[in-house]
Amino acid sequence: MILPKFSVRQDNDRVYVTIHVAHVRTTSIELDIDGDQLKFSASPYYLRLTFPGKVVEDEDSNAKFDAGTGDILVTLSKQTPGEHFENLDLLTSLLATRREQANVATNVARPLIEEIGTVDNSGGIDELLERARIDEDFDWEMPQQLDLGELQVGSAKYGFNQQYTGYLTHVHSTANEINEVVDPDHSTPDSRRQHRIACENAKFDQEYYMENYLNDEDIQPLIKHPLSTDTLSDPEFTATEQQTMVNLPSKTLLISNKQAVYLGMVDLLFAYSLELRSHLGELTIESAWAIGAVSSTLSNLEQFSTLRETCVASYRRGLAYTLYRHWDLCERAMDDVRVICQNGRRAILKVFLDLKRVFDEHDVYYVYSKLFLDDYCVWLQVGASDEVLKSLADKLAHIEVEQEEVEWDLDALEDRVLMSSDSEAEEEEKEEEQEAQEEPTRRPLIEML
Image (cartoon, rainbow, N blue to C red; front, side, top):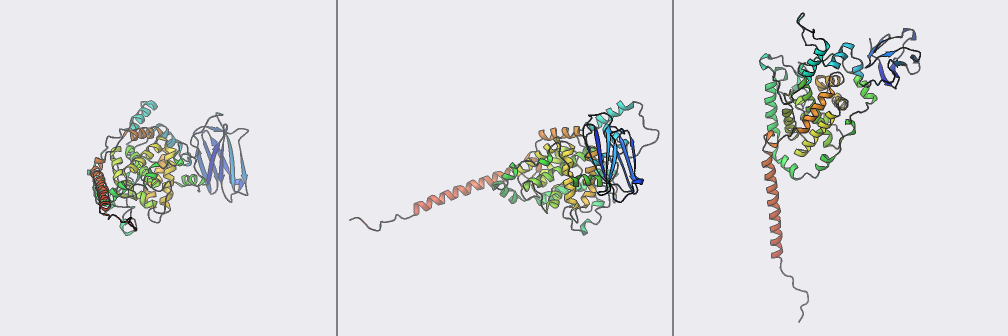
């Protein structure tokens, strides 16, 4: 069956679903309303939508077919007039099943493997909710270490939620300039991290950093540039973005390490924000590479354990791989991340849909959409928690990365460049004074007798 294009809107009392189906017989169209669900079928199309609230068929409900456009407009009455249905433009969430939506509502996800007879739900829904609350109460500075001893050579997992393998087997035979992992499918999280740090140390250029620190006339406007309005708390999604959400893979995401997923999100938001700010709010033809190079998640398949190590890694790459390498610019980009997180999952989803667009359009880097961005776009609609995001934003507001943490002795470099600048100024001043003293006294053309 084919999933048709569709859109959903509402007013105070009704929900309107527009379904686009080309070349179908009106006699084959079937509609079924069941509480919070609408089921539509017209061979070869099938659509099932699960709304946030219940709808009913009454005298105001109807369906109209426009043969010219191929659109069917379905009008449904809300069971509770005046009720507002949240996030009707998050189309992937509407395609989720009732069970998946219930899991999201309670933040309860089934384990990857269930052993029959061992699950005890005798405490009822209150106990499940309490388990979910505890599960979502993250300590952003408490590392969750992976047992590296369980990893076997040749079975390396990476990507969103560490669930993929084999995608980067031949990465070095392609023009992939983002990847820094020597052998992704025979690597471990520890080996990838050690290699990442070594690459950053080799890439950092002291002269480049000092030049940007001293001559930052072109950088200061980037730091002062306002944050894009696309990151507002309630952004509107374009028709293209809505279609992208519809086309996302249909899957149930069972997250094994939720904190790592949120931290990877922070890493990607920083790389995106820094690139956007570096070009005054515009992305360029090189933005896919630039974002991928700054993101440890993409370039080194990193999985972070704490918020601080995520921020430190972001700053290190922001000072080693970018066009403008300035501490204050990194701090401004991280504050952008805080604002975006504070504005909730809709604002973050807007960013990730843009990230997906950028990577999808590249002949080589589209693989990162398959490994990370597609799943992030699904998860942000059906799995991410606005409460957790606000907690994360609050933590970002209070965390302060010190220059000593990047381990490149930036204070000494800044002192050196300032001393050198002062010395050059003093030397120029002395030369000017000496030239003034050595300048011969000019005699008048005509001497007075």
